[in-house]
Image (cartoon, rainbow, N blue to C red):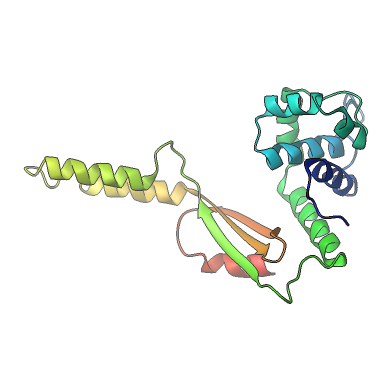
Length: 203
């Protein structure tokens, strides 16, 4: 298994991986323009570059040789890619892809877990365009300017903040430090300690 050093290699590797996991089509009545493996490879390329669906479509139009590598004669438009994202990337299928990818890396002796440790970490995703830290700084500035009403931002603000934390999406991942391959991922809601997620990620 060759290491993924170029976008073209990323595309072809994702295609080969997806062919072993996904059925070609969602049902016999679908249009059969593109297989799921081909669409999955295009979506992986989109993530690799951090592009929008429209820009991914344009990149593929400008790269006919990349299309030939995964057996495409036409470019899926941005609407097709958007619909494919929701259809293909379901938890069970993603877990199967992670398992197979880890197996392939282990066969190629790229995991290096005997030399470098398994790293685990998590991050929360704000649901608004402003971070909680920015909101807290704004409240403190307002309290300084309005010393006559020290309780102005009292219980209701704290309650709103607590409710926001309980709804906040949180992603935890386990990564092979030697090659940066994600080996496990867990998604849940709410802030708090990472410790309850460690067992699930490890096993």
